[in-house]
Amino acid sequence: MKFDVLFGGVSFEHEISIVSAIALKKVLGERIASFIFIDSSHRFYFIPTDCMKSKFFSSGAYKKCTELFLQQGGFCKKGFFGFSPIAPHCVVNLIHGADGEDGSISALLDFYHIPFIGPRIESSVMSFNKAFTKLYANARGVKTLDYEVLTRQDSQVRHLQYPLILKPARLGSSIGVSVVNEEKELDYAMDLAFEYDDSIVVENFKSGIKEYNLAGCKIKQGAEYVFKYSIIEEPSKKELLDFEHKYLDFSRTSQVLKADITPSLENKIKDNFAKLYENAFEGALIRCDFFVIDDEVYLNEINPIPGSMANYLFEDFANVLEDLACNLPKRHSIKVSYNYIEQIHHAKGK
View 1 (tube, rainbow, N blue to C red):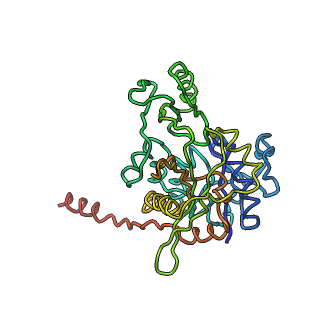
View 2: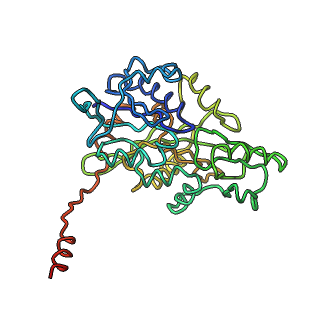
View 3: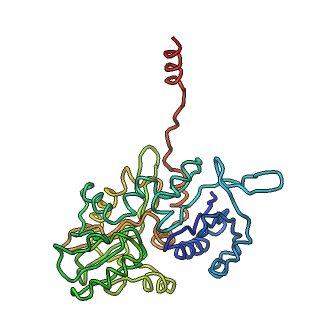
């Protein structure tokens, strides 16, 4: 099976999406038919495989590549005699942050009837905003830490005790995140977070907390549906996993080790993952990050398009992705009949 990898987008995580696409090139190799880049002007470009290097994008050299356009069923090139489609394949939505995870690209691909791996519109809405994610998780019976939401109009912390952690509500990759130990540090942390978003999620910061990451998806095997899980990872990190340690250090990591946890805790984490995924994230490969406090599992966040698609957590990532591509949700077709309009027309004609 071949894939078209869609990456870039207009987001603070634009560069991370490029890094993810380059990483996927190494993992999937010839299974990738096309790389399709969305630049900061929302233009689509066909990127040759041998040009998939970071400097190619930062230098603007991608603008010399063939521009692509969307038509019903897939992407196409513009020539002297009109538009000609490129061979359609299953699209992997690899756009982190806005555009990719807020539902914009999902809506666009759905509108043009293009099969894709990634979160659908509803699940994007629930997972893109950290405050919405907490409401969703609680409704599904998954615990979350206590929190408050700050806005530019109301930025007073009322109930939580220091130390605090502040996160832009609609941003990932640890961008704009700060730990605040006392009140005099709060204004600076809020200013930093408000640079990226108009809404901030605030939680108590718990030192030494255990954190575990699990990725997976749901596919059909025979007559029943099953979950394909990755290993459960316990990230090796300092107190706050900031942008630099999350991405620059990761490039130097050669191996991810499975967490040394009891079967009971492993089952709890998987059960919570399934509660969040079921009837919501079908068609997507997601990663959920959990906290464990006194043997109780709490959701930290849902990553609907995890960095590098979390391929490093799977023993056979390529086959998992192919299985998922064969089990994408199908939209119900609606037949437009115009019967109602005809009835009105005939009724008025009498």
